[in-house]
Length: 342
Length: 159
Image (tube, rainbow over all chains, first blue to last red; front, side):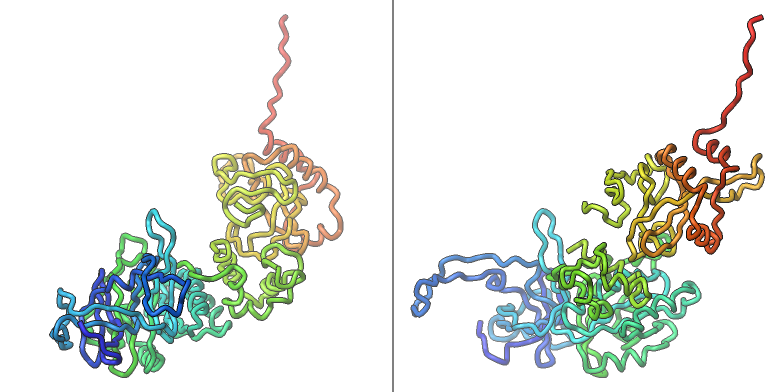
């Protein structure tokens, strides 16, 4: 194996069960993962100037998957470089390279991933993204606004802008109260785009928003994330299933792996499998209020100042703002629910 | 669980500090609204019972009883279900709530007796909300709803 400096750096575009597709210079390489990434070498600190580094201990690093979609990675090619495959012949079953290093991330969108019998680990859904698209549908399934709040808070925690995309506008007749509900988010200042993958309404505006950016779509199963991707760029050949009729409008998990797509008009888009549960990772209870933009301006104005929990304390400025109508009671309820989880 | 938590679980009454179970088997209602011992409530609901959307969260005082009209027009007596009227001690919102199966009937009667001479503010608030507080002439209805029908047994003569 040989490791060069710039030549052997690529971006992880796809991953399925231990296989990573790294794209570099217009080519794709199937990569495995070096065991080095799972481990941390501990050196003695008694003599840091010593030239001979003797490994004192090898520790396993705790994470679900050390490599995320969108990661810039350094890889080592297998053998003489025959591992490089042209774009047409992807999905080689044998790994033809090994990822040896994950380069520092500009941003990451994470959630806690419970591993049965063990403690909770961080699961990075996508890294180096610069736009989060929470995708919901007007109906079938009806929007769960609490889940949208979780996505928005996660994006705020990652310091990423969000663009709320509401799909299935053609089914608006099924949900008459929808306009009023989405208005809550418009008033806060979140951009909202109403689209329909069936009629094509709003798709041009969506393309404009995605142009030149690395975006990630998140949303519950069945809201039409993959249909949107097909509407944005026909011919990607993605599977789409109808929402199950006997399952109360729940999706059927069409997409089962993470993948990043290059868009013809510039930019990339990550399609994620439908997520029904979405916890917050690495957010302290005291910080949570700052991740609700409409509440942040009231912090410090409570009777108990920064010590206020915004629950039952007398003179809470945030509760007063909710009662006065300046903050949506639904958003306040989301805040309280998330706070109880932290 | 945290004390006084706004949830559908068990809670400790903020007024009398009794531990209250939310089990449907005990209360007979889906959303436990008030303490069955002191009948005080908490201002948690905003648009509908059980939505838990109110940010007020102040204690709610039981101020009287009212009657919810029954939908069953074929029943023998034209009466409905006995309901408790609560008033928020902070924002003065009124709400009408079902009496749970395990609510203390003596305390309900005490609330009823106290409500027979309501203050001007409560009267005005009830008028504004269109709530008819039960009066002294409704005592028999309240007793019947709480304790059941009283049947007068004729005296037996042995001769």
